[in-house]
Length: 206
Image (cartoon, helix red, strand yellow):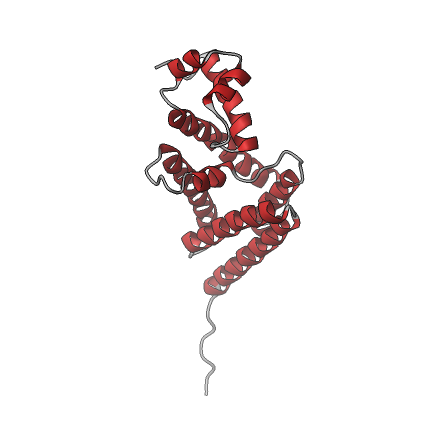
C-alpha cells in the first residue's frame, strides 16, 4: 500500500473528492477519477484496492478538516456561547449559497450506501458525526451545562436536519432558522444552569 503522503495518492484523492462531492459516488466511475487525476486506472488501483476503498478514503480525508472548520467558526465568532453555536449554522448557510454546494458529503454518501450498512465509508461517516457531537458535549460541559450530552445531540439533529432541508429546497435560510433554534436551546440550557446554581432563600419566618 502506498504511503498516505504519496503525491500520486494525494492527486487521486483530490480528483475523487471533487467528483464524488459534485456528482455522487455511484455516478462517478473509477475511470472518471483516473482521468481527472491524469493517471491510468492501473495506477489508481495500485494506490486503492477498489472503488469502495477510494470512497472510504474520500470521506476519511474530509473528517478532520471539517471538524477543524467547525471549531474555527466557533472560536472566531464573537459573543456568548449561544452566539458561537449559532455562528456555525450561519457560516454553513453562507456556504450553502455557493452554486457548487451539494450538502453534507457524509450524509449524501451514507444515503447512497444505505443498502450496505457494513461499508467502511458508512463507519467513517458515523464516526465523524460522533466526533462532532462529542466536541459539542465537551464544549457544553465546560460551560457548566448539566445535560450537555442531550443538548449536543439536539444540536446534531438540528444540523443534519437542516442539511437535508436546505438541499431539498435549495434555500439556505433554513440553516439560519436552525441556528436560531440552536441559540434558543443553548440559552435555555444556560438559564437552567444559572437557576440551579443560585442560592436558595431560607423559608420566611412565620
